[in-house]
Length: 197
Image 1 (tube, rainbow, N blue to C red):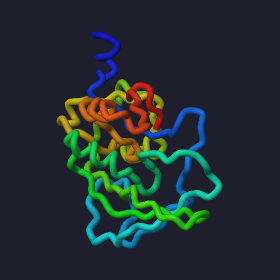
Image 2 (cartoon, rainbow, N blue to C red; image 1 turned 90 degrees about the vertical axis):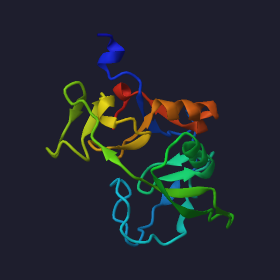
Image 3 (cartoon, rainbow, N blue to C red; image 1 turned 90 degrees about the horizontal axis):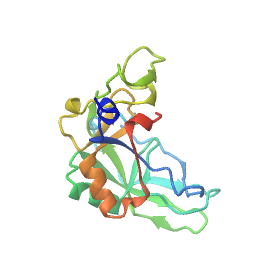
Image 4 (tube, one colour; image 1 turned 30 degrees about the vertical axis):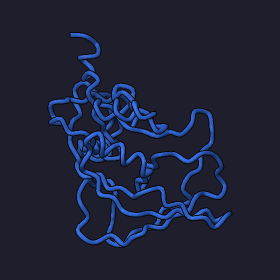
């Protein structure tokens, strides 16, 4: 058995957006609470209408380029990235209009959507992965130093949250390759064996 096969191959990758290497980037100042939404990482559809637009502000202390994807708290996807994901066959994203205010100029950015990723799947091969489970749940908030994905458990799905650590976004190789063919959008595709989450 090859090392690549032992590590679950390269059918699935972890999606990140760290920003330009060795450069600062513009971030979000704070994330508002949204009426009726407790968590954006549950993987389930919201059971009530989400008020739109969701209003945020750029961090006035941070300068640099904007990222295509902001993951924490409320995932924000730039619209061109969303278009590319849809073109690559991703169809499980519930999207909500967002407005991001630049408090220094008064300009409002409409280029992002707040995104709820529908679907949480337990795909970790825990016998091969390196992890800690501080809560003893084998779900939601495990700490991985190296993840091995069992692709059979994913059932060919294109993009979903990792049930064992719901902050992790898993992406199929075909979607990764399509995004790369469109320039990559500044995203990072991390092999699960090298992912820390």
